[in-house]
Length: 300
Image 1 (cartoon, rainbow, N blue to C red):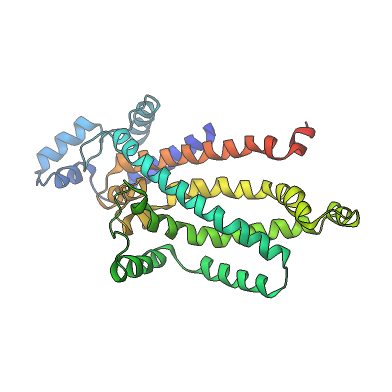
Image 2 (cartoon, rainbow, N blue to C red):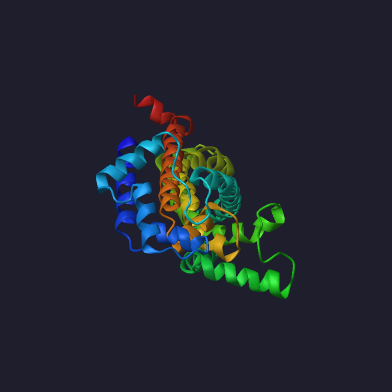
């Protein structure tokens, strides 16, 4: 994890370093000021932007290790303060979309596997194929059109403060995930249904539902938990489009604003935070294997 974080920090800082635009000039423009060249040159010198790349990088990395990710050029606030204020809304949105995804994908995936190559299986596979193919922004716009504009049941702009405000953004994120996970659940359960222990249990007269939920489904959890951990990480970093569509006050919306305003410190801090959260979640997933699958403990 340490090596990966160092690599991410180098790449992130390098990309912002070579990107077009002057951060000092952008800072003044964000404040509605038009600086002259003397002011820009003096501010660059004070901020250390005229130093060599390695000097700037190690100074920035040292500050990050102390918890100081710099100050946003556009908003004039510490990056840590801005990210902390947007972290919880994004976590709530990711958690709600994950819950919706599990509620939909697990029953559909199991049903499709049990009735393999039957009409129900074909219907579920067709629905998931459609769900995987459509982009998130189109789903979000269609939901706004139906539930906000035509039916007027839900707000267009989501403040993230209530459950009602989070319904449409969470459903938008859950659509594609549910389609993908339904296919994963179907594949994992179908593979276990053809195992020898299932054939033996059926030969001994064990009821089908006991085999399915007592043996097959628990043994199918390991690859699903792996995918779940990856999805949580991608959700935290990939909600930007949905948050912008619904004006949701999350980290993704903040990152898009930082990119459009060339707010380098905020971009760098956002990337590092998402990388840390992503790796911590996957570490927890790896640790959970020992508790979900007893075979992992027996291999030691």
